[in-house]
Length: 61
Image (cartoon, rainbow, N blue to C red; front, top):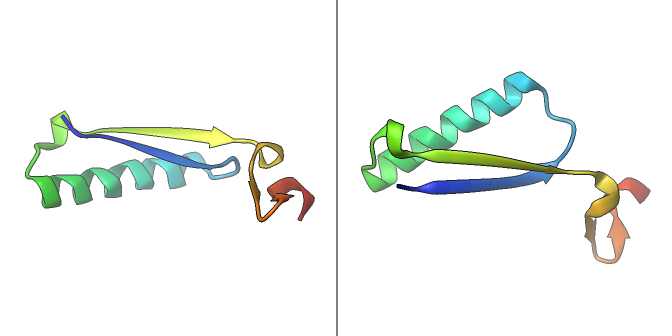
């Protein structure tokens, strides 16, 4: 049973997240042969204040 975790900053619409789950499921099914009903996708959203690159938080850009 493939489980895919996607971590991203907050701010995507419900439609965008729905499309992401659909497309990730299709990609996993295609590449692993696992049936759709066995593929789980977890979206973890984080505040821009809790994520940084090169010493700068996303919220400070």
